Length: 141
Picture 1 (cartoon, helix red, strand yellow):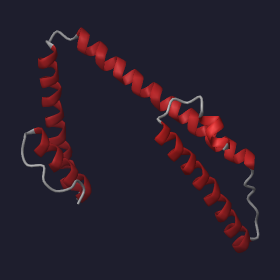
Picture 2 (picture 1 turned 45 degrees about the vertical axis):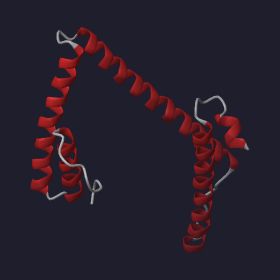
Picture 3 (picture 1 turned 30 degrees about the vertical axis):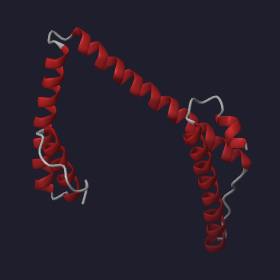
Picture 4 (picture 1 turned 45 degrees about the horizontal axis):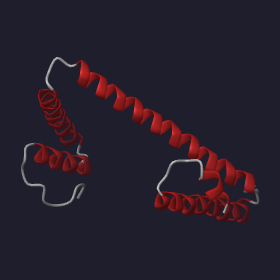
């Protein structure tokens, strides 16, 4: 398959690679079908070509590389800050934990004030988890 060939140089688990190929094929086929519907309704044609399929795969590869670079940069920053911290590692983690707890309480108040129910439920779950309370139920109900 074309997608397998173009994704072979990307570091992915075999399962993730096969699902990515399925996803790319689905996107391409969906756009093709929507283009036919677009033509039927508006008599305007949108060309869906093999080149557009290759562009989709290349865009995926570029975005994946960018996100991996972002994550690596954040990881390196975290490790650097941990090494440069005057606190021992367990105290540093405790300080981060306390900051997260304070921020989650602030976020909970903001979500409650704006009536964003899903976010309120998620935040309550997070606060419950952080303080060691019950985590029963699903997030976002």
